[in-house]
Image 1 (cartoon, one colour):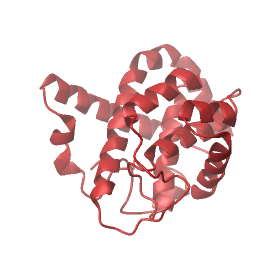
Image 2: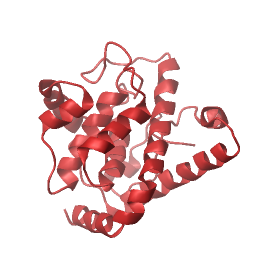
Image 3: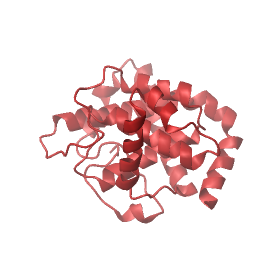
Image 4: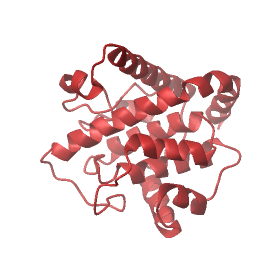
Length: 220
């Protein structure tokens, strides 16, 4: 709880600077999530069907979906970083449920919902998030519960872990900006670095730091 309060204070102090860079943060997050989704789509591995798995791939892009959540959820900026940390924990703890194009949207809306409830003093209810995410209230309730069990109810994020993930996303933002300035497609520029480590894995100070798994949200 002390870490949560400290992150909230940090978020308040950095509100104006964060407001300026949030579009870039969302771009980095959406790029990373898209990369891992597309990579896992091509892997011929045993993948379990779950409540997060859709029958078809959503027509809305990951970037547009994140922007929609950002525009309507009105949660603190730190919630998106914490949501990303939760996604990383989910992947590590659920190796047979890798993020792919069929489940990434439901995982995103659920991780933001759980993060907002844990991090913010006030947050919208499940019915509201369901409308934002394009699903029913009943499905949102079920996804929330499944997600909490999926991460083992490990919601606390240390300040050190939060900062590590922030630094990681900042590096990704810098790389994407550099590729854009060179008129290169990020998906081509980074293709060689996305083999088995998929999104991110900065070292956590909690118990997860010793948990190793090939299907991580890690950039090489």
